Length: 216
Picture: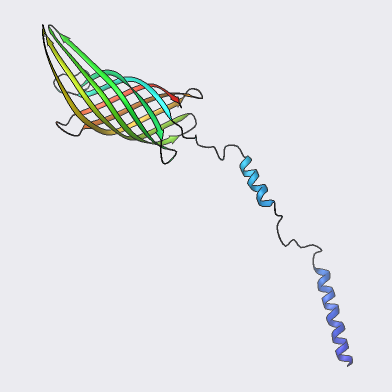
């Protein structure tokens, strides 16, 4: 009986010593609002959620040249130069960096030599798909594919006689766009493209237009 009492007393002493070694307060769970505070701190950091410009529509007006390959009569680098311009819309689709750009254009070339006068006109409709390779707040550079549908009208005048012809063609090829922001809603934009006629005699075309783009 004495041995049992002694064992019980010894166990009570050991348990008392173990409890004395424990810290007075042991946090079992983190504070409930710690996650919310971290989220608020993350949201309040400037530039984290708006590091890329938000996609938006733009309307552009550009002037420039359309160059058509011609081995018999050329202005520069084996190409004839047509002067004109384009109006276009830039529409973001599917993702922030992908744009579709429908456009309308008109280019004209007139030549005169003696009694012979030649006037060539190109009425153009197009749709370009482009992806912004560099998309910063004040600077964008995009690459894509240009699709152009042309109605070409030409007339030859000799003295009082006139002869005219027309042609429809479809062109496709790579394009590049450079855009620099001037103000909150105004941008300077420059387009370059190199296209080929798909149907009929193969002929190359180049295009370089520059102008202003307005945020919508």
